[in-house]
Image 1 (cartoon, rainbow, N blue to C red):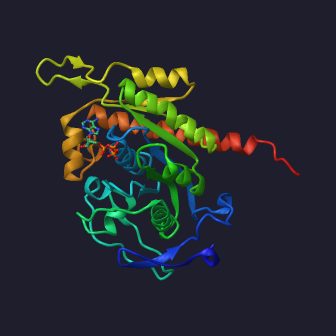
Image 2: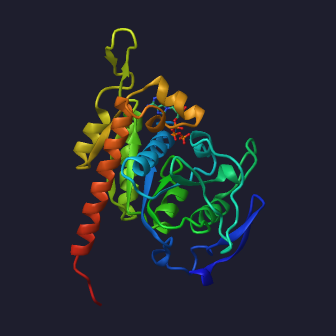
Length: 296
Ligand SMILES: Nc1ncnc2c1ncn2[C@@H]1O[C@H](COP(=O)(O)OP(=O)(O)OP(=O)(O)O)[C@@H](O)[C@H]1O
């Protein structure tokens, strides 16, 4: 692998990057010692993808006792440093790779570590892909059970390239129950199917708001839409996360709700989601082993 890398400088950090996809068989590229790479994606922006990725990663590490990494692939709007209460520039290891920055038992890498906080990122596609190569294969992740990738929103070039080049084991789709978001769920599912990435399941975020006075739930964005879409498309449903002030405030403070309120119903919902993801990955791995090998 090292032979494929070339020297690369990003945000003042010198490291190694893999060459462009041209001339390289994407399927041969794999991050060393990372067992499964999973994407947390959404067709539409602002539905809670990063919040889900963070809480899922922390639940996988703390509850399922796995070695977990979190890659913030949302290059244009990195929110992982804030949500994981992390800052500073990554060090460079002896092997000339960036060392991820860790909190809550999760090793993180984000564009937010490499550029100044308020600096706008005005790169075109090829530069973004270079940065993503650097932030995935140019990182000394060590041994990981799962690398969670917080994808950029949408179903464009960057999402397709990431899916192909990172050899994803599967993807989770986050949506609100709202119709406009559900249309984008279908789009996202189709995109992943085109690049042969299995869908691990659908998560409904902001499912309902429980009145703090009377306890009555209000379905602000509609009721049960993501579960129904998952059923209609034959996909697994991984759970409902309510719209809660604490989810937002804990994220803003950099302490994911699974850490700050581990006994809450919402923390349990994220933990349940993490267990389902682990089970689904095990099933997929078994299916893979049973698949007959085609010798040409
Ligand atoms: N279940 C929830 N309850 C309350 N607030 C939430 C919930 N989920 C997400 N939020 C808040 O909504 C905002 C958007 O969430 P987040 O950044 O996770 O979305 P995203 O889909 O990753 O957005 P983007 O498309 O910009 O990457 C954040 O302020 C977050 O704290």
